[in-house]
Image 1: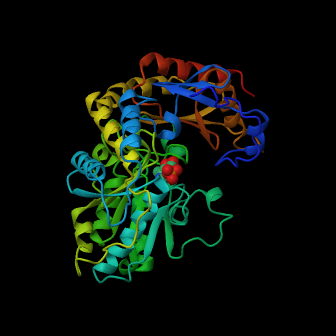
Image 2: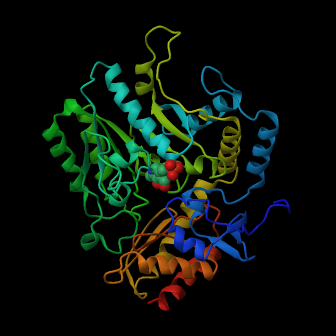
Amino acid sequence: MSLDHPKTPNDLSAFWMPFTANRQFKQAPRMLVASQDMHYTSHDGRQILDGTAGLWCCNAGHCRPKIVEAIQKSAAELDYAPAFQMGHPMAFELASRLVDMAPAGFDHVFFTNSGSESVDTALKIALAYHRARGEGSRTRLIGREKGYHGVGFGGISVGGLVNNRRVFGTLLNGVDHLSHTYLPEKNRWAKGQPEHGENLADELERIIALHGADTVAAVIVEPVAGSAGVILPPKGYLEKLRAITKKHGILLIFDEVITGFGRLGAPFAADYFGVMPDMMTTAKGLTSGTVPMGAVFVTGAVHDTFMTGPEHMIELFHGYTYSGSPIACAAGIATQELYREEGLFQRCADIAPYWEEALHSLKGTRHVIDIRNLGLIGAIELEPIAGEPTKRAFNAFLKAYEKGILIRTTGDIIAMSPPLIIEKEHIDQLIGTIKDVLDTLD
Ligand SMILES: Cc1ncc(COP(=O)(O)O)c(C=O)c1O
């Protein structure tokens, strides 16, 4: 950062911060001014251990030289190229690399700039796909309670977090929701995938029977629900969703915005669970959070359906000015190379058992009522303060930050998703600090 950049801005009012308690923040700002590997530097010069990979995105750690240099080089060489009717080599290179690492059958990617855009893109592709096949009556979309699919109108319509929906009008028509799989009475303290809840997938048959299969275009779920506070798929559940959607000619979309790029110790949750959807939405870890970018992975069967008609005609009337922009692609290529060179997905798989044990060692700690984990994802659920939901976890977050660790809270749940380069001593520090914080918290 150059010296003429103020590290402490003198006016905080202009910036309306996203998903933030603006007034609280501006009274006691928490500013990050630099980052390296596993740490942020705060504006008051403290090292903050990153327990969240930024926002589930900096999977390779922070300011990794290979990615930094690729971004710098690209910015100096080709700043921007039109995304429509023109191309540049890096977009094709990144797309090829991505399909090479994806489960067999995913032969194409459509670039976006965020998870929300990836979700809207996938939903639109699903609708247009059925229409292109002469099944234009398939317009219904099915999401799931407690699902988070970003903040576009498509995403909040299929999503199932009430605060993200209730003040935004009527949303998309023709959307239905499966039940969530949060079953604390049955699955409390489960390590990894819980035993109970596979039968919740059977609801899909009921919803399809209610509307008629010929009206349903797609089902979208997060393989592991992150933003709702880490809700894991019960054993057998995703397999069942796949079987039912296939039986009825309905597309299955996995929203892999947090699970993609190694978070579970495999490239994608589809690999981890051995369940192959028809589309995968991704973002975040694609560039390790450095440059905004998303990608929708599409099977050959879906893609090829569009490749008909006169060859001079656009096949899909959809895209973004910054779809596959050069700097993002440079960051994406360097990130994917770094993941491979350092074996970071395997690293995640190797350290996940240590992470699981460390997290579950918090069982019995004050306020803790459940712990959930998979790969390098962890959640610690706290007993809410009576009449003041979310406050206890938010206070834990503030105290943890004072003590030098960055965690995230959603409701009364502490959620963590550290960079995949995390070492055992970092895990010890994270868990030890959380224990200290909870022991002294009201
Ligand atoms: C599963 C899932 N889908 C979509 C999104 C939205 O991504 P973005 O914030 O990049 O739009 C997120 C973000 O956390 C997510 O977790």
